[in-house]
Image 1 (cartoon, rainbow, N blue to C red):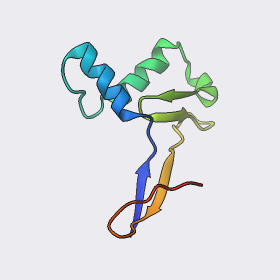
Image 2 (tube, rainbow, N blue to C red):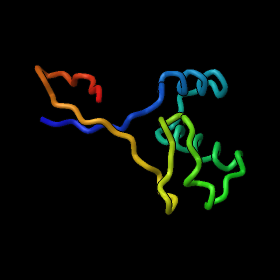
Image 3 (cartoon, helix red, strand yellow):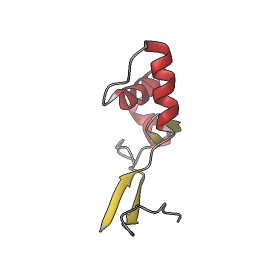
Image 4 (cartoon, helix red, strand yellow):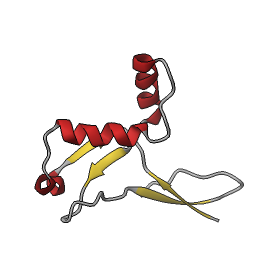
Length: 88
């Protein structure tokens, strides 16, 4: 079997900081909301998105020339019931 997974930053760090501040677990899309607000608070304009690159709660963030987020993912092959870490 082939497994595709999105590369993320350290999700434990985001969850830990979120719990510390709000005394509850983050919602399912809290990390994406955090990244979106980070862009807004950085006063990014749509034209600037293609140049925006940073490490967000959901991983490396970069955009293509039309402003779509460039996905960062990994491919792995299931081996002995486990997903080995992919190292390019």
